[in-house]
Each structure stands twice: as structure tokens, then as C-alpha cells.
Image (tube, rainbow, N blue to C red; front, side, top):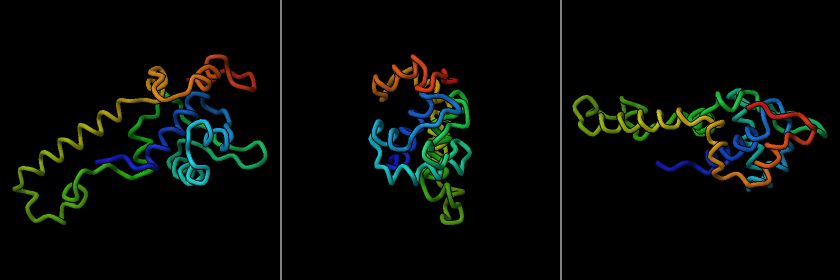
Length: 157
């Protein structure tokens, strides 16, 4: 299994918004530039994240995206599945009727176990915990988080 580009960009977007904090409106152009996400692609990803209830798209001159859920409550699994759909490693797991051997197939149980472990690992990774890792966030984004946001409000983590 390989994470799609849309899934990767969604994670980057959510990392940025999580660093700024719940309820803070961030300009789409700023997110795209800071996180190396093509602007048009970011718009499509944001629609999927908004449908999942993770962010709000704010229209207008001062618009952008606003995180609706605390970074401590949002997981990698939430974001990835909001964009790519529920994770399945094989068609026989997604559509058992597609395989007439699934009841007696030893590989089926391995696919199932691997899927469960992957989903559990992604579920355990909250965006709040990822921010503490400082993994792929630029130092400028993390510094602005530590100092508070541009409007003077401290982000809520």
C-alpha cells in the first residue's frame, strides 16, 4: 500500500492548521506555499477535509481554512481516510463477495491482520503528538506557533 499524493497533502495541510491551532483562519495561499502543496490541489483536499468535519472553509478576502477539531483529537487515520476512503489492503477485504476463496484462504487472515495493525497505528498518531515530533514542519511555522499567532491569539492544542 502506498499513500496517495492527496493523502500526503492532506496530512501536510492538517499539520499546518494544527500548528496554528483550533479556530484560527489560515490563508490557503500561505498553507500551499509553506507546505509545498499545489494551490488548486489544496482546494480539492480542503473540500474533502471539510466534508469530514475536520476543517471549515472560510470565504472572502480574509478567508482560508480553519481547524474545527483539537489536534489532540484528530488522527492520521481520520485525515487519510477523509481523503482516500477507508483503508483496505486487498479487494477481498473490501468486497468479500469478489473472492470465492475468502472463507478458506490463509492469506485473507493475514491481509485482515495487517489492515487492522495499520489502522491502529494511524489511529494512535494524533496531530498534537506529531507536532511535538517537529518532523516535517519548517522552523518558521513552529516558531510562530510557540510565539502565538499573527493576530495575537495563542493556538489551542
